[in-house]
Length: 251
Image (tube, rainbow, N blue to C red; front, side, top):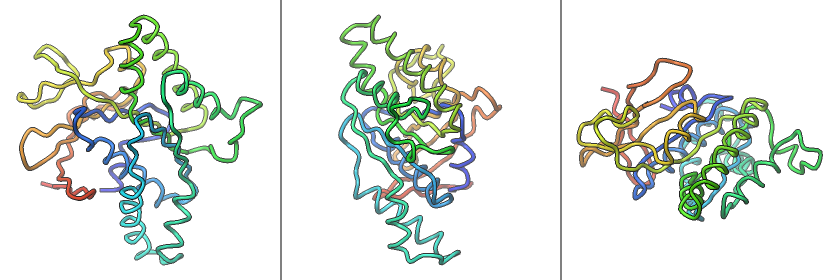
């Protein structure tokens, strides 16, 4: 299923993985997406911006090691540990505490700025993940609705320009809120009345949006609920999650 992740989350657009605020599966899926990109392009740089302090380093290492073993069984160019360390060295973990800090990080990452210090780190085709985008801007909007909304739209505009200029694969982790039957961007399952949080303005600046739901006790479903460039709405991946691993059902 690794090729599916690379086909879904493509360069030069802003993608969203939304899911229940009480379920870390959306972050787990993002880790698997990151591992997929790293093993298929060992020069890929990843910037993971952690806004909650919840990034699980050891879990990500285990996920990446599983992908390394799989790809190394085909190529065998490095030992598993050598390749694992090489790929881990390509991951930058950055902590953000509020909307101002998040904007500052984006400015620091922009190679067009003369004072850019990580020019060698951000290359064409890098992957940028913000987890959780909701945590930053839902707090900003609670403090001041108008200024928080303005800060979010300004950030998304700058993020779009950075993604387009550098062919970034950009993924925002978003929590869900309650939806009603009249909402267009919600789960296809009648018993899952959920939609991405932060309102229509957030979705306006995003190109591709997925929603992870758990309508039964056995399976998770990753649905495409919005796609600006392709007609993929309604596509569903069905999977199970156990001990950090994803098991896909290909029925």
